Length: 503
Image (tube, rainbow, N blue to C red; front, side, top):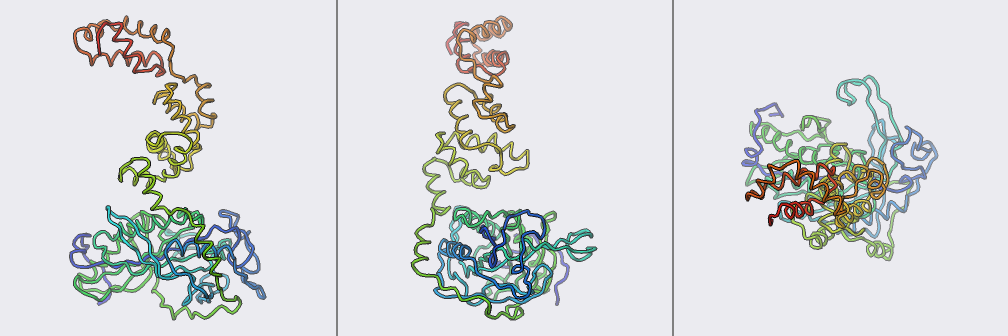
């Protein structure tokens, strides 16, 4: 039987009958200044076809020269992933046709990759899952095709296609996992956790900006199912170029449900590439999946083999930074936050910001409060990443200091943050320009209280009669009269003194 449309099964129904096997192939554009085999710049967003030369356009007679920094970055990645670094390896030609690949082959690595047999530990629901790494190899990226016309943005149904070769030749690392088994119902979460940890690791290593929305990190997700109790893996599909962490999880879940329904009905899975659709969370068929022999690999004749000097590799290893998982554990202990709060900061992209704010003098609790509260809200409203807000950790630390000194309360601090984000200057400049400093003069505060007490005699009598909670209304009146600038705690103390009631 061939693959057919079937009655959907729920995720749990599928997992009652089948076990998932995952694999993730991640392509990461390296943050080098020039391309892999030529001197063209790698700046993102340049005008189409302005960052090209005879080498990356594969013009006759042009010869490639390997980028040493790209090789160093790849070794750096391999070491951080606990891989063995090859003492000798070489590039290969991977032959296939696609319009955005100028050579009609890709310079990659095949049977002799630079890094092999590593692992990356990830945490899911409080448990550590070890993801085996099969290989880390270096290659060049392709150009970018844009299909114009049609409803899907894909080549089928398009009126015409245009090609930008700026990306062609950018250094690209491919990180391939070993088959990931034993994840059971947590398979989608494990896939997302792996992609998240890998992205964090690349940032920590300083080898890539890993901006998935710009394509500098792209995941191909492999999924297959095997009947429970069986030792024979099922036929896999590969969902190509998944470009967000959430989508990695959704793609795995959808493929498990889709394949499970087909197998449960007696159909078979077709080995193919598939496309993930962000709007629906579903995948659709792409093309049949090639095997290695279809690419007719052979050693690249225009490049010499790579034989990293052991001393060079050792120096790279010695220069590795503290890795993200170790850093998170250290900061969590130093800051005294829960697993939940640490996970929330990580998901919001706030850990670096909070750390820098603490380094600028703010208490950890205050730094976390403002980044994860008011600033996260404003980032969400503006559709920006938290790190892209026009405010620095040093400025947030200054706001924290002003609140701690009593010069601001939380309400006024929010207005100061608003002013900084609006480009009105530093926190102190915003305070001065907007007149936001808290009313601390006892005489001025006492006069405001006298007026509020006179205007609310009935409430004063309630407080005198024992309804102490009613004092909140009087404090509120003082805060309104002072436009939020009064010290609420001190105002309460003075109100009770004037009424003659102990609080």
